[in-house]
Length: 102
Image 1 (tube, rainbow, N blue to C red):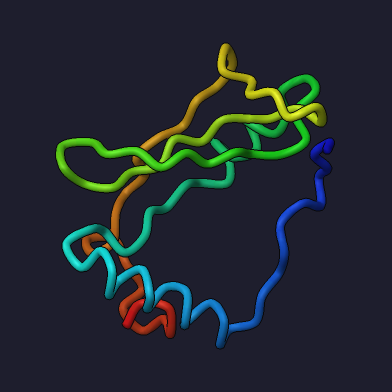
Image 2: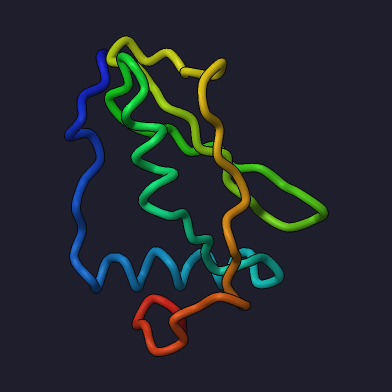
């Protein structure tokens, strides 16, 4: 199977709320979210042969974190390229009024 720039699925708000609530209930001690800026995301996707971003789960200092890496259409990580990790976490930097927060 090859990867494409349109992989992934858009979901509605009710599904998003259900998915994030399930995570919070299962991993109550972990961060709720992380933020990654558009300039950094664009730098990853602008790499040669990049069709999207693969997101790896990680743990840093006991907290969940994500490592983002560009991926090619054949599914290879651009691991020798730009790697992005551990954006500002929520709680801390959050939209507490978001329906995905609580």
